[in-house]
Image 1 (tube, rainbow, N blue to C red):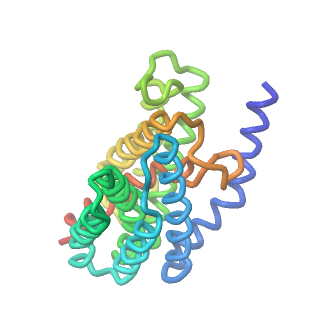
Image 2 (spheres, helix red, strand yellow; image 1 turned 60 degrees about the vertical axis):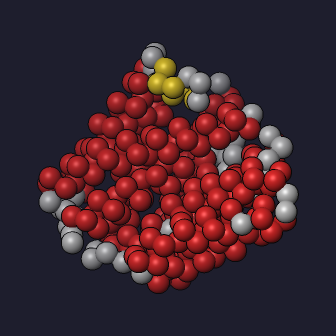
Length: 267
């Protein structure tokens, strides 16, 4: 029991300090948001590379970090055309590695490097694209509040009421009860904050379903990576939360879903 209380205390303390810092970076946009994305991306790449290394698969960290910079710069510029082309560039660079090294054994390395780049900086960079939308600072804060509300409700409901496992092979502690509670909380927050974010009731309700669902998928994908590597946490950079991916795994999948939904809705 003491261990649970200690972990919860660390989580609360980290949230009190880190939450406002993330919101301020999102609100200011520009360099502060770019720095936030870069820090999370650097940590995330290292965490994914470390997990792959535990299974004997090497990620080319220099290539991953080089592509990360190119990726985040293109999202910072806000050019959607360049952004759409980036996966092609990342694929060509990553998949050229076995050719340049002349070793067929580098094929897994190429695949792991490409996955790492697309999973962390590319998905995360959608935050900067979202910031470029009209009212982008409010949209990001809105997105963060929906995610955090969903995660909090799912955690407490799952802990107290969870009986039916959601996906035991990936995350033994996640339950359907927690997932449903998270969805209800996320939907409620999304609709309540919709007018503040400049969204219609219909769009807010749609995002209130899309954000929790994609957030859950993002959480489960990171759980799959950890289960594959045989680790409990992706890292140790955030007290009470583990690694950067443990804290922002939901955001990695939610940000692209929310951005593209809003992008096409406003065309």
